[in-house]
Length: 66
Image (cartoon, rainbow, N blue to C red; front, side):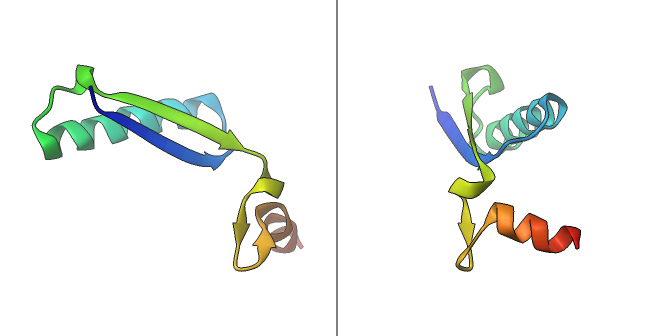
């Protein structure tokens, strides 16, 4: 049973549902493994626990909001 783990920032339920549906569909089509065999795990991280280019995601979002 394939397991796909996604680490990302916190997001709403509808976005997670769409992500699970689309990742499962693509993985099943690509591997020829039935979709019902896939398990998708989403690990949500706080914005201060994600760093890009030396800044936290919280800092990047704050700068974009200005």
